[in-house]
Image 1 (tube, rainbow, N blue to C red):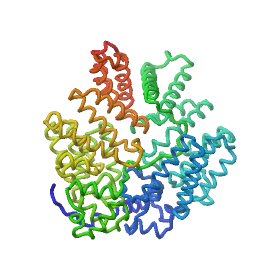
Image 2 (cartoon, rainbow, N blue to C red):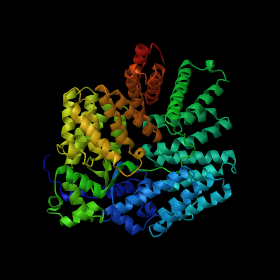
Image 3 (cartoon, rainbow, N blue to C red):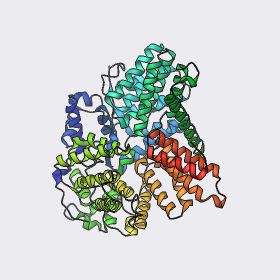
Image 4 (tube, rainbow, N blue to C red):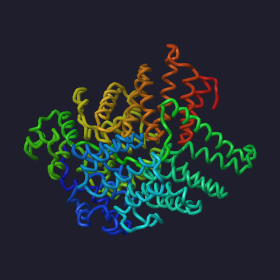
Length: 625
């Protein structure tokens, strides 16, 4: 591993710089962004990089600016981790309507957070409202509670109209809940205006990656109101808009409901006679029915309950890292003692206390320790290290273009960004090396050997060549996880299959050591399960491959994403085909998964994969889609 020195000045607080950049870009004052959630002077110190802030406040400030908080990774203390785990436990208890346990945990959490700030109180009120709603509390009382929670941070401000405002997601959840609770006591035309106001707010103020988590459920209720008012054309337009958003983000939040509504609108338009519709629309409706059947199969097989009402969303959970785990995991992976890591930075006792969780390092010490173990940033930094903080919008666009298979457009953006980039460090180099290799391989500009070599080089910018024992201790960054997974696509052809399997197994175990429910680690963990299963299947270990595909599918469905689900469904069906002779599976069963894979790929617009799967079904099963 090359030894490059990264200047301390390059570790300026990216979070603060993005807050400052986005606030100025939107021509908002410091007061407008922090109003009700923190002091103006505190906000100014965050922007200047003088202060850290906890994740709850960090998320709220980013959300008011419309920036997706999942773009950031956070290095946190054991104490903050415990509070976040506790908050997630309360959410799960409310969702499961475990009333007594939920109230017990909320009371205990309230006592611990009384001095921590208004956002903690607002979260508890929101949780309490949802629990009471689930247990039949009268709507008028719940609406009073919603306004009480709203006024904690939006004092003396009306909820509607929403569109001109800047809201955190706790505030947005309260506005959504207020609308939902008002349905029975407000006329349908006023409700139509409220839902349209909410949809337009999301379109204007919230980045697509976060918008998709709220938009479908509101659109669904809005479309039903439009249908009641005989506004068929407008209802169809919003149906298409919501479905397209889900396609772009590979999400299935309210997808069955929206597809069924879309189908019902067209049939209604044709006077109940589907055969009167144009052939192109008939084909769309047939495909929509196939997608719904595939979803229902998966929900049934994996015991996934459809979402009733999304009131709380966890943001950026997969990018939360415990400081002591990073320092210890990477130090041990490098084969260093605590004395060797501390040299030139701090006393070895300080490293010992950090690794045991007894203390959290000061800002300067933290930056130097992370720098030495080649972990990017300070306590809160962009996942995609590409130079200037304001590039975060471009890197998001690159990710989405790559996901959608628009590799030429992604390459143009990457090359332009690399040309303009002034920051030189291993993390920026790793970003461009990995991403350019990926898009150029997809475009046929790099062969498998070149692709693998570039990715391996990118990985080893921050990960030394480790033996199997040390690899098991390594604490992976997101960029390293993605490089390992990309390497799996060409490792078989370059004779590196066993090495990449070892890497994938180390990544899998790394995620399984983390502190949250594994459904939060969708982006990295699911992909790792899928790719590990694929390689093991290629080695003839079909039972293991099917088990890993199963794990991937269930987690993907739980997190309401189907990009990896589609691929893992095909892998599962393919693995089952090879086990048919053992009598564990039936031909019809394996075909059902292959067909479900086809319909999910169809929804995502993966035409090449659909053609491949269709041909497989025709040749192997003598069947058709």
